[in-house]
Image (cartoon, rainbow, N blue to C red; front, side, top):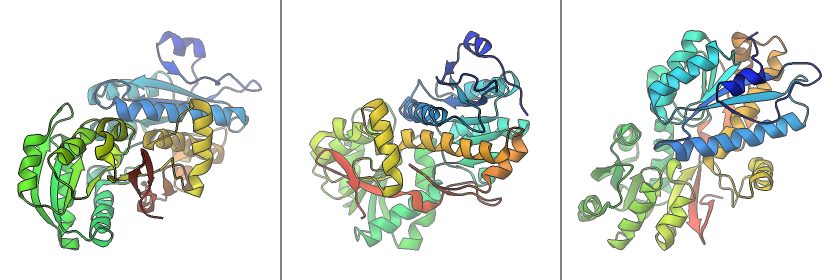
Length: 376
């Protein structure tokens, strides 16, 4: 079993420590390490993940913890930098002796962390999806978001079967996230008889996509795919409507956050987005978490709060199964038996599956300033 460092040493190291991790009945806590992007361009993913983690830890500890031991999470900020994520994860493993790593907040940092945890044989629960086939089934890495191909496959099915459209205009991020999304569309478009009429690119910090959208409008698409994170995604929606692009707009999970509504304003009406939760219209399996989070944070959760909550809940399940002498191999084996219908993810892990079931994906649309399920 991995060693536990005292709370004094943890605080001296300058970490964020999730409250409620005092020793219970003389037993040391289970210590998890989280490497998240709490600053930098991916902070809109990392900060809400941290919020979900904190709510889950408080709930579990209030129930008496796991195996009579409290949970403690040491949270580090990788500043949205993969090299920093590697340094922090290595420190959490070698100096703090954490039982598991939770993180990171986007593809590049998650891939960098995977190399670290596989080297040290420590379990990683990743709030992202695998981005390369050779990362799909690493022994110690478990994903909580569906992979790009599953996401795009579901999106294409929705466009052709529900919206009855096949001519697509695409505006996407220039960086890795947008590139992988584009590659997945190109790979799967033939399956659905879809044509990419025009593809344009933009960056996270752009504040006007009018030139790119003008080119897309000229291609006469039947649907606009905007593949960004917010606020850029919301800006693209607003620009599109101002240009008179009145076809359906559909986007990925990274756009299913409140800035879509607050930044795009009336232009957001009717926008369809992939998500893993619609807190204004939750599925039965999500209602407990939605009410819990609202009672603790006085707001509704979104995707990454839900993923943070699920990661800790699944970690607790694995620790309970592995027992007090849990080591990495026992935890990995315990995770490979998990059957979990969570706030965001539906998990059916096994030796050959370390990713969520694609049925975790839900489609939401903006109605009256809220995200509601587009498919009932």
